[in-house]
Image 1 (cartoon, rainbow, N blue to C red):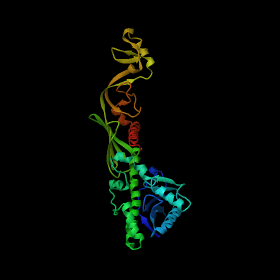
Image 2 (image 1 turned 90 degrees about the vertical axis):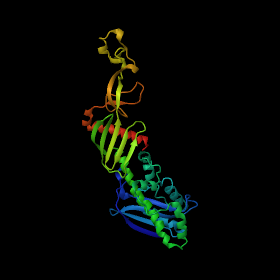
Image 3 (image 1 turned 60 degrees about the vertical axis):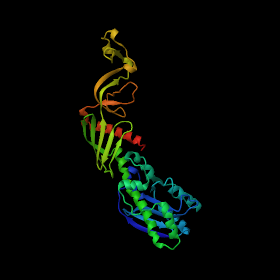
Image 4 (image 1 turned 45 degrees about the vertical axis):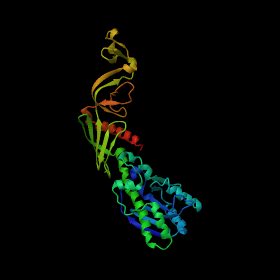
Length: 361
């Protein structure tokens, strides 16, 4: 068995967003000769881990099929003291494969008591936000602008390993190690995708709020720079979010016209047909009985003409609706709201929560 250890350049861990501790976690990736652990062999495992405040990589490569157990044992022994294992789609392939090999060799399973961080499952919902058609590791690295020196996929690598394992082509070792090395290093690069949920979950400040025509534009400053810019239009409204580097813009269309504010306690109101509005009974008592009736839920309202903004929940009051049974909530936009950063931040976050729900993050 060949064992190689190298240093790895430092990288941003985003551990506070992804909820792991760097010095008790390791990244890993495996290479096999097939999908089934019962009919194929494990020939290479690579890991990245922290040691003495720096990052290192270790790879175990089987020089032939008979060294599979050595590769597996070397990895299991090394990872035993770690709390968290980080991988890309390992939930579907790598971990089930390793557990089957552990069963075949009747080895203790140190993986069962570890936290598992699957970067594929964590970042997959971002495909909708970023407009990505494919969410495999190669596509994600390409989106980030990463260039891989390795050009082969795992399937093409099988025949390369078989030639290497024959003992006649020792120079193929580098191609095998390179592919695995770039897969693991690629995972550390993918951590940058965590900057998107970090932004949408509150990592920003509002620097300006202004009405421009029939829209309100909010300028945002992000706490963490994004690796690539994006534009997203909400499915449930025409709200548009644009962000690049540390700058963002939230463009919210106004509804300019007439809306209704419905009073909840309609029993306390009377409806005035001529004025087409409801007034409280304490005032209605001075109106001729011929011009007032008991209010009903559907006509217990006052009308208001102005410029209104949508709100996912009741944040700004009073709340206005297009009709009694409408589920769309609005509030009248006033310039003074720009001087209320706390309330404005809560409003923006409610929109971001809606976007996170739309992309199912």
